[in-house]
Length: 88
Image (cartoon, rainbow, N blue to C red; front, side, top):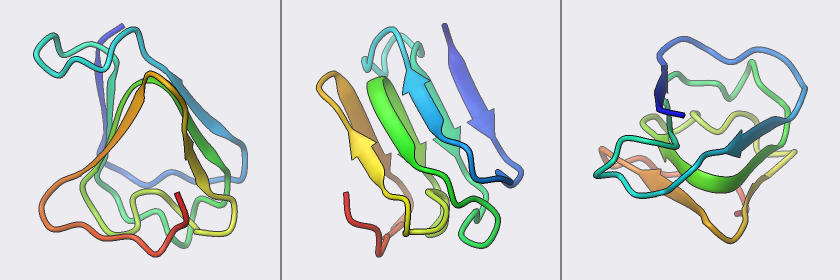
């Protein structure tokens, strides 16, 4: 478990599931950061079961059609003035 940063683009249509150990940012564990604009390259659903997903660009969550689900124990954070048209 640890901190994972995706600086490039996600490509594909498969699901992205985040099962981090913790959502406590002070530990650095269970944090996945997406900084690329994935709106035109990623059409899969995103699910956060535990841990924290950090979006650093407006299109970080990919195409809005599949949706993003944040379950108990999961956290979604937007940083740097990021907004999204996606239903959460």
